Length: 295
Image (cartoon, rainbow, N blue to C red; front, side, top):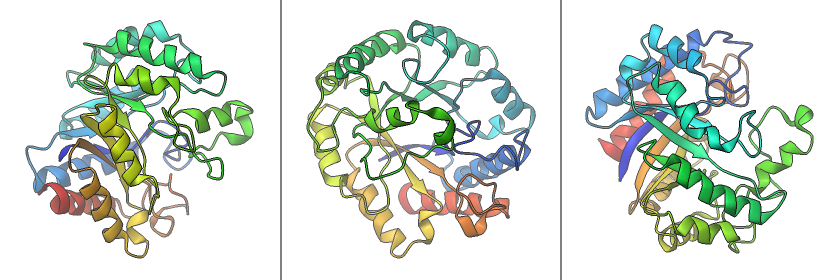
């Protein structure tokens, strides 16, 4: 069921890692290295993937190599949203992957790529088909983000809200399905490539969409997908019961499980982007999840 373990999410993006507390990623590099070792100790055959970077930055990958972090990884990953937030054009995808391949011999995954339908649903469908054309044969794994639109009553996981203006609201329209569960034109476009492209879908604690998501992924021909198990959520009541339910529901897919998000009371600062007070605690969480679901 679990085909890979991913360590953190967008570590070079301030929405997911606090650069003020760790300006040159020294703390992150050490934390990820320990997490990779803990995962290997539980399952030496399970691929370990460095969390997808956003922006795509070869210098960050070089830093991880110099600090020994890549020695504990079996792949690296990138994220790209050129029609929404990145300062490059969609046809540059092969060149962006080549930038990372130039600084590491590890396979390069695309663990998040997507297009918002904020402007027009037809643009999203076109962007999906064009993305599939550009990335086919370029990466061993491509996860489309995402299956569902973000509910309007939730908040997007970003620290750019004050600076983003209307761009913030693009976060809410990344799904193949609208908030009410009805399909957009991009769902049909995805089904054309479901044998090649996977999905990235984050499930919140006790997410009411889980069962419907499974049914939709099967309908769309999804073989592999990416989701997360939150270290912060592990301190919630009945957290293990929720994790068990989520992983059991996803048993028919090849799952890349992402470990991330610092519990507020265990961070240097009280925020999910903070480096942990005790680096080993995150590694212990990763090891325990692999032991439970892929030991």
